[in-house]
Length: 144
Image (cartoon, rainbow, N blue to C red; front, side, top):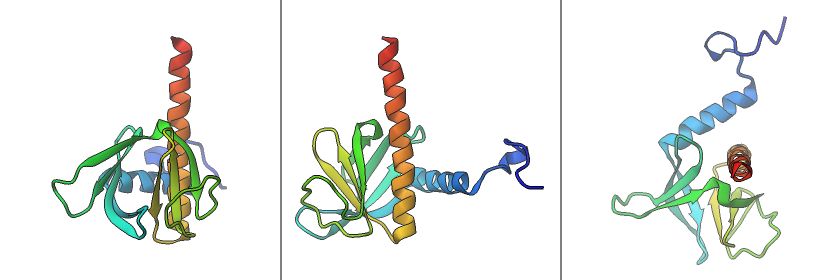
């Protein structure tokens, strides 16, 4: 018999999708090196990580202890574009392994992922966190 009761002992009831998200979160909270695409062409290796609340993504140039850390609120991401499928003109060297975060203020941040599966997982999970943060912000503004 498949499917057991949800919330089984020790989280055994996690489906494949939940396992993928959990693994992604663990990896991103620790931080991982990703290539951030540059307007001048090419890319810069950066340490990218999420805070534990999954509200912000932090980007810091890899290999430099004194490098400034940039925080981007996930609630401020307007759109997530995968590959070269992007509506607006963005001056970044995008390819099929890119994920671009279109931000509130009109700027964009693009990362190059390792492969198509990695790209899709990154886009899907960040998209879920962006939606969650937006919904939370909408609830707060309705309460005021």
